[in-house]
Image (tube, rainbow, N blue to C red):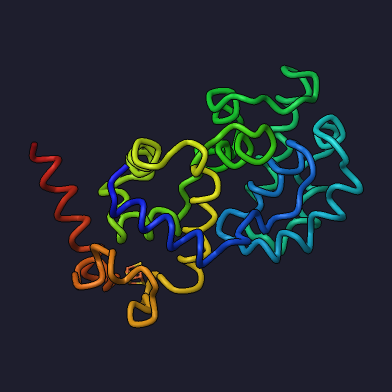
Length: 229
Ligand code: SF4
């Protein structure tokens, strides 16, 4: 692995030694439901609603018996009604096709309603112990700013990180980057002056990578450039 990459991962690990999942779950079904609810919502908010959800719908078969109308009031504070629709529909498939057991491959998981790559990778990593790098908005931003990836899309970022980072560090490094994105490398105003990664960071001196408007403009320019071939 590149020396620079090594240093970045070392500093991240030292800075966030206790990083781990902040969502509360104890089996693949709970992981799936909590992660669907967490899209565009805080983990703390999800943790407030899931105890009642898991009490009244303890597994995928129980969830498959209900309706989005019944589920929605439980999860309303996590946002869109579509989340309730997706959870119920995904559980119907799990109940019918997999006898109630959440499947354990990326292909099967991403075929479920409301389950994208990120959610599927969270389930694989934390419920099945299969190394994965779920790329959310923080991981995407932080890894591309740091230079661990140089990608335009989530899929590209995931692939590049998997190539660059040793397999045993995939899951932990994803937690380190999430915490770094939440605490220091904010989307709007990254705190580069107090960032322990500044000496290694590709973006620290590049306005177009840390100024959100310039960043969006640069991304659009790159998209245009690649579309033109
Ligand atoms: S130096 Fe700035 S852009 Fe780079 S990781 Fe730190 S906060 Fe983010």
